[in-house]
Amino acid sequence: MSITVQLAHFSDCHSHFDGAPMRFSPEGESEWRTQCGGYGRILTRLTALRQQAAAAGQTCLLLHGGDTFQGSLYFNRFKGRANADLLGLLRPDAMVIGNHEFDLGNGPLVEFLRQLDYPVLAANLDSSQEPADAPLRLHGLPHLFDASRPWHRRVIDGVPFALLGITLPQMAAIASPDPHTRFHGIEETLSAALGEIKAEGIAHIILLSHLGLEQDKRLAARFPELSLIVGGHTHSQLGDLAPLGLTSEGSYPLMVNRVAILHAGHSAQSLGVCELDFDEQGRVSQGRGRIEWFPWQPWPYASPAPANLHFCAPDPLIEDHMARRYRPALEEMAARTVTRLPEPLLHQRIPDARLPHGSQVAPLVAAAMLAGAREQVGRVDFALHNGGGVRCSLEPGPLTEADIAGQLLPFAIPLTLYRVHGHELAEALEGAIDNATDNGVTGNGSGSFPYTAGVRFHYLAELPKGQRIRQLEWEASPGHWQPVEKEGVYRGVSSAYTASGKEGYTALTRTLTQHNQELGITLADAFIRWARQHPTLPAPAPLIHYRPHPGA
Image (cartoon, rainbow, N blue to C red; front, side, top):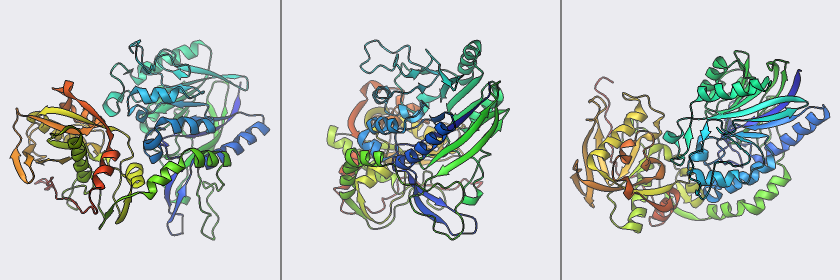
């Protein structure tokens, strides 16, 4: 039986309930900057779409491509509670679990999932080895469709659909799931689940994927029985976006091997809106739609506004909800100035010829981590932080609590104290830089590049692996630097993410891990506390020294 379905979708909102700034470069016009999106405007649009679908005798689905956690002051302050609350007002029909949902371990995710009343999909997530006495059990949650129950049956206008989800199998390398939580391979998971679905006689199959656009293309080529892939993770944008001056990665929907693929940006700035015709075999025979952005300001030019822009007021239900429950706490933080910056502080992850010492912000974050750890436990020799955990440069002027916890350090991850041998510290530094620069390895991003306090070093990219860290020293007392001894034991502090060996920092987990101690404060907490002691924050003295490769 053929069927037409109205569909809306979004992903990677990262707790940006008020949306986020956008830059458009409309054809023939100057650049336009405006705040865009937010849950209030998204709900206004969803309400209209649902009414239109009902009037046409059709169903309107809302699907979420994962990564609702992290990224904003709302999450830093309220964790998953605000996400569950506000997502509930949008009424999704299904959601896939993203990697950031596991940033703080299983516990916060379980608390979030317990508040939901719609299917959450992750067919390759296996929590069957979870201890029976775990205080917050992931296994057996009623709305979770994981390896034990990999897909959800949904009848739409008399036609049975199968909804299933797939998330990143390398979760342990990029997030912090509990050790007993496993993630099976993508192809083996889909092969088994699709076999079950076909055995039930279901031809209409929707996959919610938190793998990224390129992986979604590969899945469409490998599994032609899929009808539709609704994706996330890579913040990809599709469709004719030239009128807005935005980059597109393909048509909307993107058809690969007769499988339709949909992506719709990030940060709750936009919503994918489409109408899909499915034939009796479950193929998408025709798709009509686009990504829509929701500017807060009116169109400022005399020319007609591009069709991808949708101007509307925020839904009063969400506005009232946020005004009463969430915004007052954020407004208090925005009113509290912590320190002042006499000049801009630039942040880029990897040093280069322009910024030979790299970020001017990340070393300050490391200094704050070191000070915060020493306040709690006394002797701590160094702090080590990954550059990707710092999210922005800083402009001159006052720096508030909201700036720090909402923009600079929005990932609400605790600090962890650990002990390592000197040779393991060198190996961790080298592994992190190798990963960030793809030096002899296929890395997973530049965010692993290390910044330190209490430790300084040289990295020589051209040397053989295992020999690239030279002149590794630690600050035994203020201004007094000593060589790091290979077999010496040193006490370090990092975020729990880095201390658990992610993204090239594997050596930090090799030995002495039984001495790890979570300090109970986040990066933002430590930075706010430390910055209050400094009326101004000038650029720090460099501890990392960049020089070009001889062949560069």
